Length: 273
Image (cartoon, rainbow, N blue to C red; front, side, top):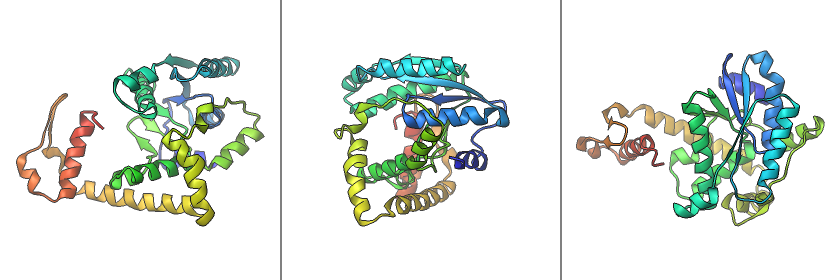
């Protein structure tokens, strides 16, 4: 877990004086991230605000929220708790529960960032989350951006544990007697990510035990190439306001790699991706 500090410093994830929102579900990953950031906050000179979201998916979710609240009160940590209707939102918008829950969650996060309640939000994604994301994106037919996986920094979001192996997190929790709750839906293979984690990836590793490291290396190359291509494109030719994006027709004679990125940029601006 010491590599977290190295990542924070090398990627310049946190600056002195910032208020960092820490997304805490009560699970082992987020509890370890919270514990670690609490441990180093004085040395780096930043504040912490815990953000907990009850997605209203499980009957036990209130217990998880109560667990986080109790932990924060015991350790004198400021926190905000929110409740969203992920199931209802998913049905209304014809999304999978995974997609709907993510949108509801990030709507809360975005609101906190926009209001200036926090400067950044730390998410407890780790190395295995990165592997699952890359593989999912490839299966869904992504381009270079999707194959590049999760970024250390994206907008107001930071991911200090992205280089940390799950085994390190488990060891850290044990060494520091960190309590956490178990989300029973993590074992439900009807969810795409769980299916990969529980069934697909273990099978791949029986044949290629260095699969995870190799996939991450591949991902870094994809991101490197995608960043270079983007650096050659004049995105200022896009005419964008709050609700409309206009792409000059002359841009559509360019190479498909450029046109697709112009369109993606527009869709991202409209929050359609």
